[in-house]
Length: 203
View 1 (cartoon, rainbow, N blue to C red):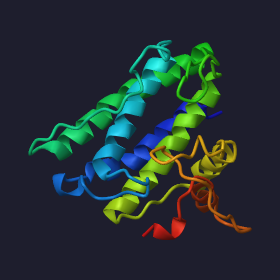
View 2: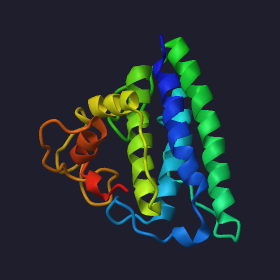
View 3: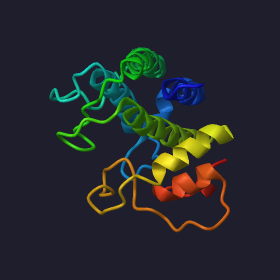
């Protein structure tokens, strides 16, 4: 039986080629995350990977573990982004697998302070973040985003549980207010609409 941490690895593998395609001239491009350029989106992705890895190891309540990870403003910034993404992804994969095997709860104060989450639920939160922000990244770069059906169905199940109250979807947050959902949509399209994205922006 495939573990959730193994399915999470497939989500990271799905977005890694899009991170690798980033060049310095792309960093100021606007993304589907309102108010976020590509630099901010990458900093969020990498920071969340380090943060969730720390949480999986029992340090989620420590101040600053979920902060964005800034990119160095240097000529080799594209390679810096890819290296930071790969390093944080390696830490995350190891930490998630260990926490899932030990059935060790996570503290995720960004989501609900003082309430530890079972490892599978915590991993599902980050899997959603990975796939949806991977789509944001691909759209920003004008690249196709081909999410396998099984992974998209899992993302949709998690997206349906994301709070839609104004505080959770305020400007500057990772997800915007939900958009209307029609019947019989592909699972990723429905998930994107529930999280405030228009799937028609995809290429």
